[in-house]
Structure formats: C-alpha cells, structure tokens
Image (spheres, rainbow, N blue to C red):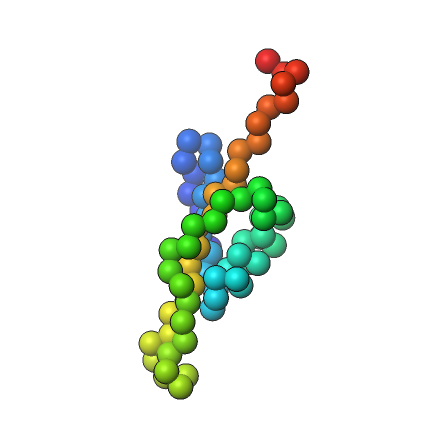
Length: 74
C-alpha cells in the first residue's frame, strides 16, 4: 500500500491477488464503506500457468471522496 496527498484528497494504492481482494483490503484499511471511495483498477491480477512464474497481482488506486459541508455552515 502507498499513500499520496493531492490537493487534500487522500489517494492510496493496494495490491492483492485479485481486484476483489484489493478492494476488501482497502475498505478494511480505511474503515469506510464502498460508497465513500472511488476505485480505479490499475492492473488485473492473474495467475501464472500451472502455478509457474508469470503471476501478477491486481493493483487498484483508491481516492477518498471528500465530504461536503452541510448547507448551514458558511
């Protein structure tokens, strides 16, 4: 996992064997529901042939969606 800040937006990258596992890892790490993050799939994971070399992990980039101020706060 790596983290970057871009204009007060938190961006993190996660790797796992599958995209689904990477998303679960991100949600658990951030403690947020899926609706509060934006997910960009960087690479799809795949296994090597018959367990041989060539396996690649899935990699995603997660951005935490900014929370808007309530209307009554100026």
